[in-house]
Amino acid sequence: MGDLEESIDADTWEAGAGLPAPSPPFPLPPPPVEPAPRASSGAVFRLVVAGVAAVGIATAGVLVSASRDGIDYPDEWDPRVADLADFVEGERGESFEHPVAVDFLTPEEYSERTRSDESELTLEDEESLEAAAALFRAFGLAEGEVDLFGSSNDIADTGTLAFYDPVSDSVTVRGTELTVELRVTLVHELTHALQDQIVDLVEMQEDAGEMGSTAVRGLIEGDAVLVERGYVDQVLTADERSAYETASVSASDQATADLGDVPAALLAFFGAPYAFGPPFVLVAEAEGDVDAVFRVPPDTDEHLMAPSRYLADDDPRDIGTPDVDDDVEVLDDGSVGSLAWFLTLAERIDPFQAMTAVDGWGGDAYVLSDDGDSTCVRAVVYGDTERDVEELTTALETWAASLPAGMAKVTATDDGGVDVASCDPGDAADLDVTGRGADALAVPVTRSYLFADAVTVFDPEDAFCVADAAVRGLTLEQLADPAGTVFTDGTFDAISRMAIQGCGLV
Image: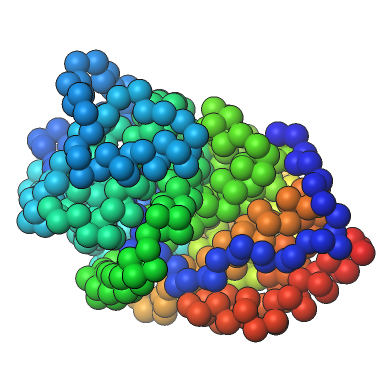
């Protein structure tokens, strides 16, 4: 990607202009692009280890090539959504090739559609879920018995109002009454339908692979979130906006109660694309062509978390799977990724130190294995520079020291990387998991919004300097304040001016 044009000089930049006040992370995120269908005897439970592990419930059609020939599309839009489809076309500047079906279900029918039956899990499924739970505990992101199956069901059901299925090319909705919140949600889902007619979403997600799956989801969801926000700002009346905000708060409170037993890290993995996606798309809009980014999407979650890395074409090094003893059973392997490292570190160390460490991420690989007595993960992670390796090492050593004695070990590799080994302490161990890592996502998310704002004025390198310095002038408590007081009381204006000066731009 080329550098963004510098449109106005630094003296005219109003730091934080248009920046939405931070809100608590992921109270009730929109539904995933992938369908959350009713399980059948052939249902596939895919453990998405784009970090520690997040369980996605999906049909094989989302995970493998799927033919969509033979779909009987409606001749006209359902009258209840026709004006919403018109808005999506206007806001996105693209036209639908054809209407798509919208299926309005009762809450009971929706739950039946989205939840899967535990009795249909195979032995392999159950073993994979147990391995994923062990991985969560080994990274210190969960403790006790971790019910990933039940948590995934709860997120797919309780945590969503609708979903777009790119295989059947249809939208499924919870509810038969078109409330204001359901209208807003439908704008989001119809944006996915339009995206799917511009670029094949199934193929796009297949091509992303494991390392790029979260980043691609962020692009897809970020685009839909921004169109949804446009609908709220441009179409809803003042009374409707008030009703929508009230309903959103109520839904958030209800979701907090209903999803209280779901590990915070799992909710964070689910919600991260919706948090990081919008500022990433704002950067793409500054570049001038969002659809072009859909054709050349981000391919690591580092790109999603720090759009400046995407603009710089910063890709990780290729790393082979770490070695393990011949007599152990390998349960899983893959890449941890920036998002999971941040959540892991920020759960136990200062979130700004965690962000610094992750900023230098240059690639990694892990292997999860079982020797008959314990399940352990070994990961090797590299930095972009020697200084990055030092920062990663310091952060990881601090993290390891916060865990029970002997649980995790951090050493240097012979080739300049960092070797991290940690074992599942079992479901009886007290790991003092609080969900701080998920809360701390407010730090890099806010920086991404600031970068999206600053890059319309400065070149990407300078814009990153300003955004990074500005966010580090705040505290996590200020960033997590639902009222966003720091952005309205003049505090942030002063901080942003100091950030500009500190970066040598005035």
